[in-house]
Image 1 (tube, rainbow, N blue to C red):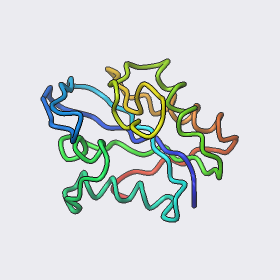
Image 2: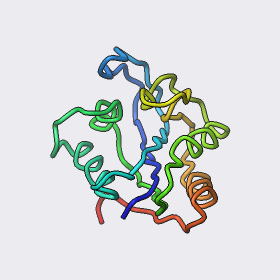
Image 3: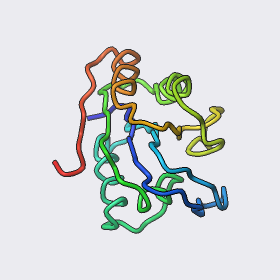
Image 4: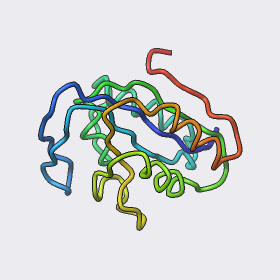
Amino acid sequence: MKGVYVLILRLNETKDIRVGKLGRLHFRRGYYSYVGSAQGSAGIKRVTRHFNVARRKNTTRKWHIDYLLPHSEVICAVFSPTDEDIECVVAKLLGEYSSAVPGFGCSDCSCESHLFFTGGNIMGEASGICGGVSANESIIIYPNM
Protein backbone atom coordinates (compact mmCIF):
# COMPACT_ATOMS: atom_id res chain seq x y z
CA MET A 1 0.00 0.00 0.00
CA LYS A 2 1.35 3.43 -0.96
CA GLY A 3 0.90 6.61 1.02
CA VAL A 4 2.31 9.37 3.18
CA TYR A 5 3.28 8.97 6.83
CA VAL A 6 4.33 10.90 9.90
CA LEU A 7 6.53 9.15 12.45
CA ILE A 8 5.92 10.44 15.97
CA LEU A 9 9.07 10.11 18.09
CA ARG A 10 9.98 11.01 21.64
CA LEU A 11 13.48 11.91 22.74
CA ASN A 12 13.75 11.43 26.50
CA GLU A 13 16.88 13.52 26.92
CA THR A 14 18.59 16.38 25.15
CA LYS A 15 21.53 15.20 23.04
CA ASP A 16 23.78 16.01 20.13
CA ILE A 17 23.60 13.44 17.33
CA ARG A 18 25.66 13.19 14.16
CA VAL A 19 23.26 13.08 11.20
CA GLY A 20 25.12 12.08 8.05
CA LYS A 21 26.26 15.05 5.95
CA LEU A 22 24.28 17.46 8.16
CA GLY A 23 26.88 16.91 10.89
CA ARG A 24 26.19 17.15 14.62
CA LEU A 25 22.74 18.48 15.43
CA HIS A 26 21.35 19.46 18.81
CA PHE A 27 18.08 17.70 19.66
CA ARG A 28 16.01 18.87 22.60
CA ARG A 29 14.08 16.55 24.85
CA GLY A 30 10.51 16.26 23.56
CA TYR A 31 8.53 15.06 20.57
CA TYR A 32 9.57 14.97 16.94
CA SER A 33 7.42 14.38 13.87
CA TYR A 34 9.04 13.14 10.69
CA VAL A 35 7.15 13.29 7.38
CA GLY A 36 7.94 10.60 4.84
CA SER A 37 6.70 9.19 1.58
CA ALA A 38 5.80 5.57 0.96
CA GLN A 39 5.32 5.93 -2.80
CA GLY A 40 7.99 3.45 -3.88
CA SER A 41 7.48 -0.22 -4.61
CA ALA A 42 7.86 -1.09 -0.91
CA GLY A 43 5.05 1.29 0.11
CA ILE A 44 4.04 0.95 3.76
CA LYS A 45 7.02 -1.36 4.39
CA ARG A 46 9.06 1.87 4.71
CA VAL A 47 7.36 2.40 8.09
CA THR A 48 8.32 -1.12 9.23
CA ARG A 49 11.91 -0.37 8.20
CA HIS A 50 11.92 2.74 10.41
CA PHE A 51 10.62 0.69 13.35
CA ASN A 52 13.45 -1.81 12.81
CA VAL A 53 16.10 0.93 12.68
CA ALA A 54 14.74 2.32 15.96
CA ARG A 55 14.96 -1.16 17.53
CA ARG A 56 18.50 -1.52 16.15
CA LYS A 57 17.46 -4.56 14.10
CA ASN A 58 18.56 -2.66 10.99
CA THR A 59 21.84 -0.74 11.18
CA THR A 60 21.87 0.63 7.62
CA ARG A 61 21.86 4.44 7.50
CA LYS A 62 20.28 5.64 4.24
CA TRP A 63 18.31 8.70 5.31
CA HIS A 64 18.67 11.46 7.91
CA ILE A 65 15.96 9.89 10.07
CA ASP A 66 18.05 6.70 10.38
CA TYR A 67 20.52 8.60 12.57
CA LEU A 68 17.86 9.87 14.99
CA LEU A 69 15.74 6.72 15.30
CA PRO A 70 18.13 4.64 17.48
CA HIS A 71 18.20 7.49 20.04
CA SER A 72 14.44 7.94 20.23
CA GLU A 73 11.29 6.11 21.19
CA VAL A 74 8.86 5.58 18.30
CA ILE A 75 5.39 6.38 19.58
CA CYS A 76 3.57 5.56 16.34
CA ALA A 77 3.32 6.21 12.63
CA VAL A 78 0.33 8.05 11.19
CA PHE A 79 -0.21 6.62 7.70
CA SER A 80 -2.63 7.82 5.02
CA PRO A 81 -3.06 5.76 1.86
CA THR A 82 -2.65 7.73 -1.36
CA ASP A 83 -1.06 7.38 -4.77
CA GLU A 84 -0.28 11.10 -4.82
CA ASP A 85 3.06 12.60 -3.81
CA ILE A 86 1.85 14.86 -0.98
CA GLU A 87 4.79 14.54 1.44
CA CYS A 88 5.83 18.19 1.04
CA VAL A 89 2.28 19.49 1.51
CA VAL A 90 2.00 17.52 4.76
CA ALA A 91 5.42 18.83 5.88
CA LYS A 92 4.44 22.45 5.24
CA LEU A 93 1.20 22.06 7.20
CA LEU A 94 2.87 20.20 10.07
CA GLY A 95 5.39 23.03 10.27
CA GLU A 96 2.55 25.35 11.30
CA TYR A 97 2.20 23.38 14.57
CA SER A 98 5.85 22.89 15.39
CA SER A 99 9.46 24.03 14.98
CA ALA A 100 11.39 22.82 11.93
CA VAL A 101 14.80 21.18 12.20
CA PRO A 102 16.32 22.97 9.18
CA GLY A 103 17.50 20.80 6.29
CA PHE A 104 16.46 17.51 7.89
CA GLY A 105 14.95 14.92 5.54
CA CYS A 106 14.44 17.31 2.65
CA SER A 107 17.56 17.03 0.52
CA ASP A 108 15.46 16.06 -2.53
CA CYS A 109 12.93 18.93 -2.32
CA SER A 110 12.73 22.64 -1.51
CA CYS A 111 11.06 22.27 1.91
CA GLU A 112 12.62 23.84 4.99
CA SER A 113 12.45 20.48 6.76
CA HIS A 114 10.63 17.18 7.10
CA LEU A 115 11.39 16.90 10.83
CA PHE A 116 9.60 19.02 13.41
CA PHE A 117 9.93 19.49 17.17
CA THR A 118 7.14 20.01 19.69
CA GLY A 119 6.97 19.82 23.44
CA GLY A 120 4.02 17.41 23.29
CA ASN A 121 2.62 14.59 21.19
CA ILE A 122 0.83 15.94 18.08
CA MET A 123 -0.46 12.60 16.80
CA GLY A 124 -3.98 14.03 16.49
CA GLU A 125 -2.85 17.00 14.44
CA ALA A 126 -0.69 14.78 12.23
CA SER A 127 -3.62 12.43 11.66
CA GLY A 128 -5.88 15.32 10.72
CA ILE A 129 -3.33 16.81 8.33
CA CYS A 130 -2.55 13.50 6.60
CA GLY A 131 -6.21 12.59 6.30
CA GLY A 132 -7.19 16.03 5.08
CA VAL A 133 -4.50 16.24 2.42
CA SER A 134 -4.90 12.65 1.19
CA ALA A 135 -8.73 12.67 1.46
CA ASN A 136 -8.37 9.23 3.11
CA GLU A 137 -8.68 8.23 6.72
CA SER A 138 -5.39 7.96 8.56
CA ILE A 139 -4.23 4.68 10.08
CA ILE A 140 -2.27 4.72 13.34
CA ILE A 141 0.46 2.07 13.36
CA TYR A 142 2.18 1.25 16.65
CA PRO A 143 5.67 -0.28 16.61
CA ASN A 144 4.63 -3.28 18.70
CA MET A 145 1.80 -4.35 16.42
